[in-house]
Image 1 (cartoon, rainbow, N blue to C red):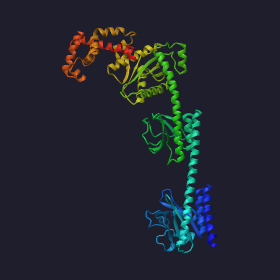
Image 2 (image 1 turned 180 degrees about the horizontal axis):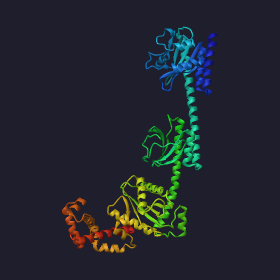
Image 3 (image 1 turned 90 degrees about the vertical axis):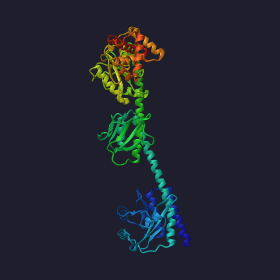
Image 4 (image 1 turned 90 degrees about the horizontal axis):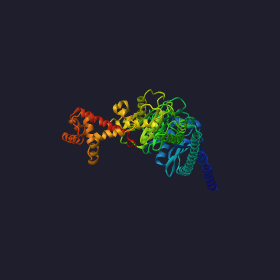
Length: 582
């Protein structure tokens, strides 16, 4: 009957452990229940459950029964059990944990190197037995029994504690799993609430400022939203400067973390269409981010990318309207028409005042539609800072602007053109951007555009790339560009250069180019040969062919001047040609 009664007692205790886990009790409560069950079943004076700390350097008491809170606190803070690297040294708990086998001390006063004598005396125990808590994945801790008297732990007593430790390990593992699931569920739930809050701010048109304010409330630290040019989009909390003045918009490399620590600060990339147009900085954040804070930043990054997409879409629609208006004006529509003026006013433009026509060309082999779009966006940002607002759009692969003469901040056409050129260069990261500017015009926008485009073509044929092109700077060519009809110019060039043009077309030669280079190098054959990377004899043969076809004597300075003028007129005729503007 005694054995049967004891068996029932053990089964009831193990059932209580199982019920505690199934009922969803916390890990600490389960650990205390393990200790109290072991103390009751084995009639121990004290009992404790030890588990590794976060760094797995020491064992600390996580659950106990019969031990005083003072003793537990002193052991955990002042004398935690070091986990020795081997299984043959260290405290009994360390040996049990490392070896996976029980370790006992029958009399701590006789145990060499037992450094817990002081606290053991305060707690009044003389002997202890430590058995490992073993699971399929390894040892997760130890179950320690303490007795106030000197005691030899026999095999039966050790076996019973081991049996209980097996069930305790299962209970602890299950409790940890339940705790992890509960923590994950809570994390997911709170994470979803954060996402909903940030998304609600964006949907309700809170914009960048609203998202920054919400993130500041969630993280309780300074928040700065910055674009790739280094400008602050929004900020919340204590005043703080972002640590970076700008960065490449290129797509993050594979495997790069969205949220990370960089230069001693926390940063989250905002990714949109394969690039990083913006970032979230936490300049004043100290220490590591919690899991929930990291989730909040990740959600903020997603919501900000949606906000940027919304803004970009709105800007694209607005820019399409500007492009359609500009195309009509450059195509010859009367800017004095009421319908056009009304559409322009809705977009913030005043067509009644005089304007410059600006034409910007990006001279790089790597330019693409994406680069031109970014250049147009940058030019529009510049235009948005002045009043009356210039009309800027992409037109026939060039960035074109009708810029009011009275726009604030700019006094002359070249001044305007240089600011425009810098904006385009900053957008695409190259300096080879050429901008041509017309003279002011009040209503003849199509003509002003034609002249500016022609000036750009003349500069290109003269191999002048980068900088500002003005009609005055082109000299005679600038005057000729202002002619309404290019037909007389073609007649003039055909009389003198027509034979060379036709010969080049029919035979695939480069006589016009050779003549242009020869005139540009002051009729020096050696310099012409070097410029064209040809042998001087080849240049001599070409020049004789040019003289034969045109009747020119290239040794005569007057004839050379006439050839130079003809080439200039040819460039202007090409610049004014409607075909060349396509």
